[in-house]
Every structure is written in C-alpha cells, then in structure tokens.
Length: 452
Image (tube, rainbow, N blue to C red):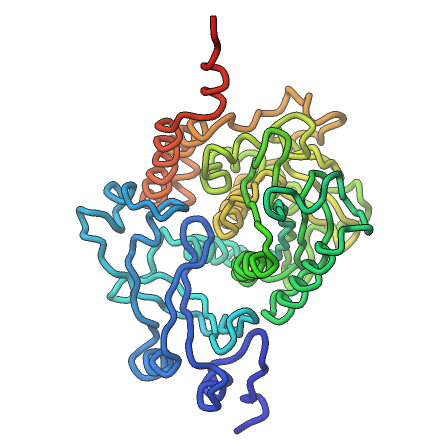
C-alpha cells in the first residue's frame, strides 16, 4: 500500500483511500447524496463494499433514487410533481441514477464509519439531468471557462440559533466577544466538526439580531464551495441538535430579522485576479461588465435565488438587505457591494437569503456576468448615498408573483438556461405561491378578529 493510500480519519479522501478504509473496517457504509432543488442533501446509506463494486466494476453509478427528489418542496410534498417533466404521477415517479463525483468523497465527523460522496443526477441511460442544481452550475462554469475565466467564490451564511424558545443571544451581538458560554462551546464544536469534514470556516461571529450568528468561508473553486456549503448545513444541524439547540434558515424569520446568504466572488484569468486595478477608484473592464451584467440580469432570475414567498419579506428599508438593484463602493445597503483592495478587489452579492440554494445562486450569478461581458454592459454610477432611497434604480421584486412573472417572460432567462429549466423552476415557484395562498396567516387572524 502506498503512503498516499493511507486514509486519514477526517476530511476528503481519494477512492483508493476509501478502499483501504473499507478493508480496514474503518468505513462500513457510504452515503451517495444529491443536492435537491433547495440545496439540501438527499441520499441513502449503502454498504461500502456494494458502493465500491458499483463504481469500480459495474460502471460509475452509485445506485438509484426516485426522481421526485428534484421535484418537491422543502417538506417533500409531491403534489407539485404532476406538472414536472422529470417526475410525477403521469411519469410514475421513475428512478434516476446517482453518478458519484469521486473528488468529493469525505469522512463526516458526526457519522463515524460512514463516508459521504456528492453525486450528479443522471438518467438511467447515463445522461446528466439538466434541471439538477449541480448541473445548472456546471453548465455555467463551462461557459465561463470557454471565455477563459475562472470564478472563485466564498459564502457568508447567517442563521438564527435558539435554545428552546429563546435566542442564544438576547441583543445585538455583532462582533461581540463576551458571548454566552453555551454559544462559545457551540462555536468550538462547529469549528472542529467543519475542520474534520474538510469544510473549514474562515470566521464565526455573532450578528445584529437576537440569536443571529454568521459563519463565513474561504474563497475557493465554485463547485467545491457549493458542495462544502451543503456539508456545512448538515454538520451545523447535527452540532446544534447535539447541544439541544435549534437552527433557523428562514430568510425572514420575523418582521425585524433577515438572514442572508451573501456571495463573495472574483474572476481570474491565467492565474491572475482580473478585478484588480492600479487604484481603488478604477474599474477594470471585467469588473465593470460584471457589475453591469449582474444588475441587468439577476432580477430576471430571482426565483433561482429567492425561491419562496418568505424570501421577499427580507427586503426592507435599513435592514442590511437590499431594496433596489444598485451597487456601491463598500456599501452594505446595495445589492452589489464592491469591496476589497488591490488583488483582493471583489464583489459581494447581498440579495440571496439563507433559504437559497447555493448552486442556483452561483449559476445565476455566472449567467449575469457572462451577459455583462457579452453585451459589454456598463453599470450606472455607484449609489452616492442612502441606498434605500435610491429611487433611480430598479426596485427588487416585491414578491414571488412578480418574480415568477419576470422569470417566465424573460428572453435572457430562456437563453441562459433553456425551456426545461424555466418550466421546472417555474412550476416549483408556482407551487410555493399556491401553497401560500391556501393558508390563513396570523396577520389575517389578527386583523380579522375585530369586534365592532
């Protein structure tokens, strides 16, 4: 056995290291997973020897799963699937195959003896399923590579953490160091678990609302960054439950609180960052066209980065979530924030909420950047003042109804992603709208229970 085949007990491993770990009985099972429409991992636990037989002797698939995994809402409701091309009562809920990405095999610290591997959804005859989130991102990355560019991204994740019914912090704990002991212990456990899963975080901190926390991640290759984010979500949930805590990833969990999923990005060419400039006031052409393309394009793609009715309740004045499609130099009130200096110059997109699917956010972002470069879309001047009074810029969609209408009628969205994607994600958005319309809300009860 070569030294490189000796498996570590944590983090990413090679197929050879997995084989060694199975022989040594360190690994008894493998979980092939596919990200669903919401960026949540779905899969099943396979006997490790069966997994190795399938990927080394019988081809490159790791079993099958029902295709409805790509056609349900977060509660796994299947009623929406009757209109989906991929799965539903008309199609009989057929299977799809799981094609493992063998560069993503990893040990998970909270599941001893079990390895996890990200997979692509493929038809039973081996064709990748075009509406799958991972495939949407891959297609956009390929188009970007044809232009000679690489995108590097990093995520900034906000969420709420509750101890029972109480938030773990009772006040604005942004950058606070005197956090409650239970929260210090939680951060310690999460930091170690993410490190062991080869998904190291860059920073942990409190945020502005009671119980709100933030975890940020280092720059990296886009697909790997999205895969790592799904591992982070799963690991975070486990660490919280082990400590009796509850995680909330709603974009707007209350009238006063918004949880964002901010995307930091830069473009590189021939190993060099192309957003860099001799001085900070200068916009290089790649940076200029990226900003212009994002501002022009992302409103048409909103169902990909703001997928449910609650997503839009985060867009409120002076909420640190944007209200208009504008940009600014180190301006946290804008949808697109230019930040960093010199070689570190990059963009931060602040529109997506914590409920967003990272693969779809990244895919929509790349599509917008490509359009900006293709059409040489120069941005308007940066926002000069309070971004929430920037009436000269287009307002973000007020709800999913507006968003879906723009998405389905957009020539750009159709060109960028194709008919199947528009239909599939349009059906998903309409299902969310219909479900919301059929429910009686607390606001209706509050405003309707009035005695004359």
